[in-house]
Length: 147
Image 1: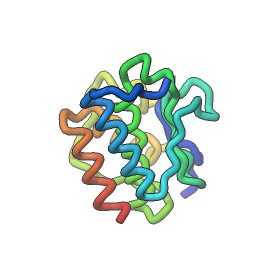
Image 2: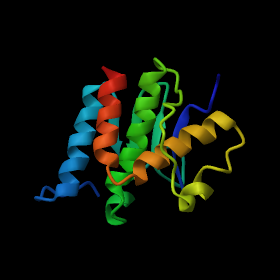
Image 3: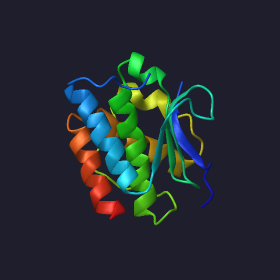
């Protein structure tokens, strides 16, 4: 199934200080890099996005604006969920079929997709991103599907 090669969230690098959220961001970034994803802290090639996964070359862009908005970690969790979906599908993005649902407030961000699988992929990413244990969950998903 050929979906758009770019999966992402639509619409300043962390300073080196002791910050638990920053530490989690850096650890998740390193985890993705250990699984051969290239994580770039720069504006994605698709305008109006906070984060983006390019399936073809396993590149994740994180827009620097997310640091100012204080949504860097949730953005990276979202894209890391897509990375786990890519690993699970053996380099073809596929749903993980998690027993989680995104909150209703997130629905406008993915229900506009006409393609059912794309909508489901985004719903999973928003469900993990907004889950209270989203960071630990996405690390476990990466470890399970990307090894």
